[in-house]
Image (cartoon, rainbow, N blue to C red; front, side, top):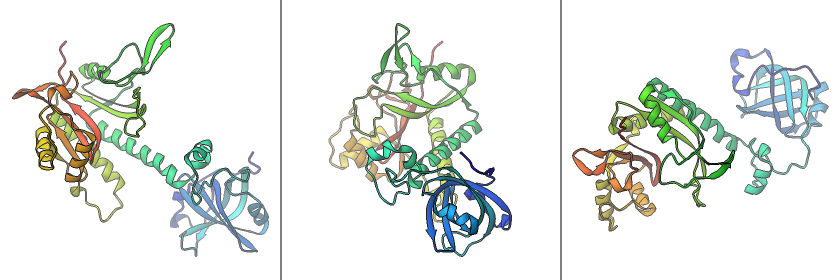
Length: 357
């Protein structure tokens, strides 16, 4: 319960030179307390960073008696700091304790003391306060927002397709089945058939959603539940689709590397290899592969060493791609298809299909 009527006015990243001398309020949890006698220094962390707070006089005892990781709201005046870690700080006038932490804590939320994965998951709320852990979620949110922005700028409409379905929407994957109102149902493993129908009216669509595949796998490369960015468009070919994928990737990098002076976006070039190019390169590396053979994990690792970073593999054989991928007109053994790789990891799979109404 909040014991004082204080409301947050700023996050940590909103404390700038322009508000020096102003009274503001921040909210977060106490990460560190350094008591030096007549005053103490608190580090208060929120989702966007940390703020140094100086407490003295009537707020001193309350601050040093408050356990670390307690949730607080602090009001005070912004002033320059002499700390090497903080350019500005907050001279506290009032501290409201929202919730006291109970010690001993099951894990160290700062990450200075490492814990096993089981303990971290048992205390996930505290684990998420570790900046290294929370940064994954913050980065993911920014990347997805950036992808949406890119696709909307290209005329795509965001859609939502069913996740409980009556039959498989795409071959080649095992489904999770269950009884649904006395009928057999499945968790969707792909929006493919829905996307193909949607583009007949909406032209360009995309969906960002979770899908489910009942794969008996213990690797992080084959998850049973995963987030997918699915795109479908009419009136483009598979080379256009690769152009779009390249634009999405480059825009994500442009967002994340904006502050990196040593990084140039022009350095991000994505080459396009054919399946047969890959076979030739692998043969030179001593691998005996024939046309129609799939590229194994070991083969992809070899290619990843030859092509640092992102690269496309296109024009796969018909037998290695789903039924809805169209053949190449000048070579019916090949499909108008592609995979985007990063090293040995497949990030995107796509191609040109054909619908008949």
